[in-house]
Length: 358
Image (tube, rainbow, N blue to C red):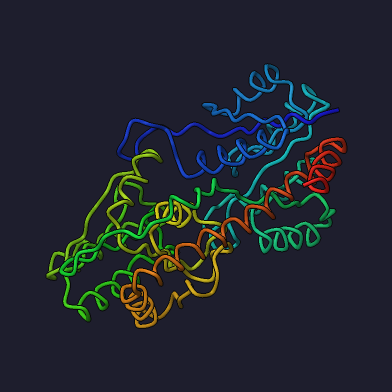
């Protein structure tokens, strides 16, 4: 029997500064769905208003597996859904590491309650899998109910990788994403300012200012007050559809995502796809150490920015190609993980035969 996978997201209300309900989570799910379908595994994603809409979508699609994206369905709802759809394997997918989940009041209690009900908890990062397995064992539950379902990303064609033109008097640094304390915006702003001062250029520090979460308001306030008193500029962007964000990246010289915790980071992946060099922390799993800097050390970040800025055209090209290759390797491994779990024996065997013949 072939698997049919239904991904269910909670619909956004569009209050982040644009009319679309598109989010990082919905883009992430879309990439996985496209990958599964391309590999012969039938999959679909839907957005629903609330818990009460899940039954209708499952009845309409008749899936073998339902993956609820992120922690938003109350555990008790599955007591209703499981008897209605007894042949469905129910899964809740976690997109965050423990430090971030610690700020989500329901995450760990609900994880235990899901596992008690036979609901699989799928994490998109290996460390999160390990942590949730410990949670399960600590509560007397079987850790085999915790699984791994990594992110994927549509890697651009090789011919689309081209360094951007730069100005010498202005440097555009992007530090996008929801404003949260663990995103580390402030230290990155200080590092970017130090770098701009060292090359005698004006800094334009680009952030998303309409999505503030998890006590991020003081961070945004500090950013605004710092730049208001400096010779540099804070450029505030609203939340936008994915295609619009890719257009914005066309004007960015270097992207910073030197965060304290990450599981994948679509913003950095988008920069990779847009030929923008990235500077990140080692928390981002798909990119090599050449792009890593210490999230607690602004001077270390500034040095990283300086090294990227002073690369010649050939060195820039090599960096961009490294970023692309790193993503290719990560996504190949991620795709294999999904295919091992959801691909039928016939699909897996035919793929193997094709590889043997190639």
